[in-house]
Image (cartoon, rainbow, N blue to C red; front, side):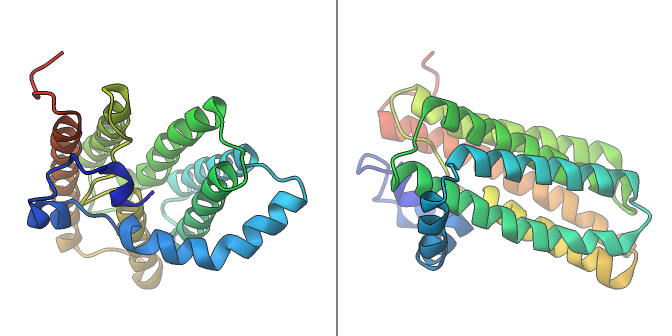
Length: 229
């Protein structure tokens, strides 16, 4: 799911600076993860584990952790589970992608589960921030809404004759890294300083740029004007 998979020569490659700014952590992390996790993917395939099963396990784990952190938001030590789970979730996403593509398990149901599961997981994992001071509910809800819009913008690329857009700068892997860092911060010091509230407008800005990038690169890829219906 690297950035290059979303650009088949028609994206404005003549703008290397724009492409660099739209890159996500997946661009750099995914090849390394695939190489390190391929032996595990092969073992899981031989034991009959499917990509859809991994997707559902990842979704259930994310929703469960999000509920626990939302209910027990006053127990800061529990937020230390966030970076650990997000790393596991990234591994699940890499392995289920390999099972789907490299081991012939790709299906329409799997594609739907993958997209819906990613959105539901992000909602569940970002929601606990609304209960952590100095964060406020409204900005967290806005971030969640923008996450959903960014993924819809990514899916829209394939609906207008292009590819599934994964442009950044705040794609799934980047959000996981940021959220994991916040979770580790909360767990390590018990409570966040008031200045930590600045993170939320930063996330909002990055998500808005991500949405714009996905729309404009999808439009450039399909050679359709942005105003076309």
